[in-house]
Amino acid sequence: MHKILFLGPQGSGKGTQANRLAEKLEIPALSMGQLLRDEKAAGSELGKTIAEIIDAGNLVPDEITTSVLKKRLAQPDIENGFIIDSFPRYMEQYENSKDFFQPTAVIVLDIPQDESMERLVKRAEIEGRADDTPEKIEHRLNLYKQETEPVIQQYKELGVAHVIDGRGTIEEVEARINEALGI
Ligand code: AP5
Ligand code: MG
Image (cartoon, rainbow, N blue to C red):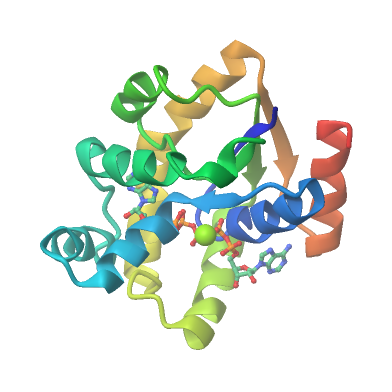
C-alpha cells in the first residue's frame, strides 16, 4: 500500500505533483497545509488560532496538526493508500508521527530559493494566499532549512527518500517522480 510523503521547499510543487500522482494511483492526496486552511475557513476557535499561525508563515504546534490529520486519516477513502503533502515537517512532529505514520516513500522536491520566490509571488497574484508575501516566503524558507531539512535527513537514513530535481516543466518533474517510484 502506498503511503507517499512529499516534502520540499515552498513553491517546489508538492501540492501540484501530489495531486497528479494521486490521480494516477487513484488514491487521495492529503495536504497538511490545506487541511489547516480548511480549518481556518471554518471559522471555529481552533480555526482562528490556526489562522494567526499560518498567515504569519509559522509552523503549527504538533497537538493541533496531529489532531487535524488523524481526523482525516480516520476517513474510509485512505484504506487503499494515500499521499500526504508536508507532514511531518519538524523533528518533534517526526518523532510523534512514527506511531501512526511511516511513509513507504518520501519524495523530496528540490528547487533553488530564487525559483521558490518567483513561483510564489506569481501564485500570490492568482490565489492571494495570506502567507505569499516576499517577507513571509523568506521566513517560511528559513523555517524549512532549520526545521524540515533535519526530518529529510532522517528519511534519508531510513533509505526511503528520493531527492528529485523540481526544476523544469510540471510534466518533466512528474516524469522524474514516476521513474523514482518505478511506476
Ligand atoms: P503548505 O500549504 O504546505 O505550504 P508550503 O510548504 O509553503 O508550500 P506551497 O504550498 O507554498 O508550495 P508547494 O510546494 O505545494 O508548491 P505548489 O504545487 O503550490 O503549508 C502552509 C502552512 O501551513 C505552513 O507555512 C505552516 O504554517 C502550515 N503547515 C503545513 N504543514 C505543516 C506541518 N506539518 N506542521 C506545522 N504546520 C504546517 O506550486 C507553487 C506554484 O508554482 C503554483 O502556482 C504552481 O502552479 C507552480 N508550479 C508548480 N510546479 C511548477 C513547475 N514545474 N514550473 C513552474 N511553476 C510550477
Ligand atoms: Mg502546497
